[in-house]
Length: 186
Image (cartoon, rainbow, N blue to C red):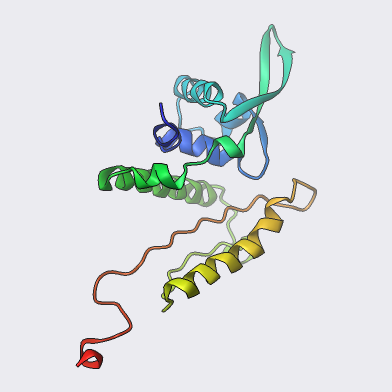
C-alpha cells in the first residue's frame, strides 16, 4: 500500500492527527479519543500504521497479563510527497480532501460535545479570507507562515500548554477572479 492510500484513509488520518504535537498514546488512550471508531477497526488501522513505520512503539509494559504499548508518530514517515500528490487524479484528491474535512468536523464536534465551550477563551476561530497575491507574493506569504509556525512545532507538552490544531487550506479562487477585469483589458 502506498503512503497516499495508507495516510488518506479517514480513520488512519484521524489516528495520525491524534498523535500530532509529539504525543505518545496507548491504544486505550487513542480509543478514548476516537470513541466513535470501533475498537477492532482501530486496532487494524493501528497495525497497518505500525507495519508501515508511521507509528512506532516507544514503551511496553505488562498490564493484567497483556502487553500495553505506547506509540509515537514518526512524522517523517507520515508524509505524502509532492510527486505522490501530483500522481493523484481529481477523484483521489476529492476523496483525500473529504477525509481531511471529515477530520476537521470530527475535531469540532468533539470540541462542541465537551459542554464547556468558550470560543474566546479557547481561541476557536474559523473564517475565509480573500487576498490578491501574485505567485511570488503567495510564496512569500507561505514562507512567512512557516517562519511563524515552525519554532512552535518544537514545543513539547508542559503545564499550562494546550495542544492546538492549526489547519490550513489554500485554494485559488475560480475563473474570472484575476485582478485584471475585462474592461481593463480593452
